[in-house]
Length: 256
Ligand SMILES: Nc1ncnc2c1ncn2[C@@H]1O[C@H](COP(=O)(O)OP(=O)(O)OP(=O)(O)O)[C@@H](O)[C@H]1O
Figure 1 (cartoon, rainbow, N blue to C red):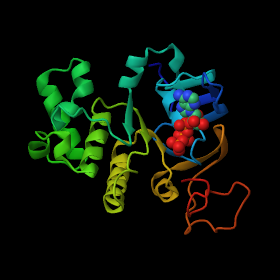
Figure 2 (figure 1 turned 30 degrees about the vertical axis):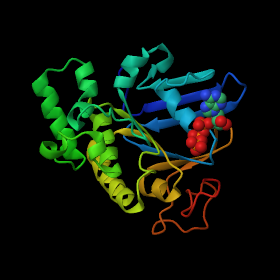
Figure 3 (figure 1 turned 180 degrees about the vertical axis):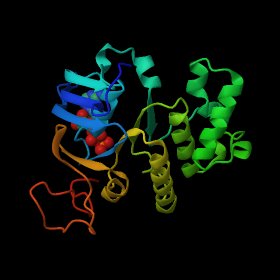
């Protein structure tokens, strides 16, 4: 990756559009920057282009216009496999390999990178520890022997294993029951304070966005950016406020 200065955004979308082959314009003309270390939440109604935006960053979807830079490098000119090793990806149905143990799941990318066994073991143990799973007992289990919340933790550990600077998280906690979700959010917040990744986090839950996001980007249909602001802090900001008003607390009107 090219070197960047502290002032450069880690992720930069410039006039990005995506028209699918059937003519659907998922994203029309989107520009936004995500500074290094920021957790940016994307919210908005179903079908407004959040997932498409996310997948264009790691090239699971190719934009039909515009440019996306990650750490100053145009992703269109980066080998997708190389790119994805530097971008952790966590999705709702986590997609753990069912026939591999938790340990082997978390070690997937380090193995692909050719790390030696001792380094992989140490890294996997550290990652499981980081997400609150005991490496000795949980590492040997298979995904079906874990709760939904534990599986999501493994997904986060796997995404972090090769220490990517960027994490893309697409509704990572939404399939979890509310109590486990609450704990996962709290732990992820603690974790993020420690590791300071640049995170793009899609959610339908405005409360989750307010809790986790350094900023919240509100999308409307066609991937139009309606607003991008820090979440309102009721202690710091009155609810009726300035033109550049922060995203209000409450439910996301257009969201499911
Ligand atoms: N492969 C595809 N081919 C055609 N249209 C698609 C494809 N994938 C997504 N779309 C359309 O693009 C638009 C944006 O979809 P996208 O999944 O990005 O929205 P989203 O905001 O993530 O939605 P949700 O909140 O429901 O997950 C939708 O109209 C969707 O139907």
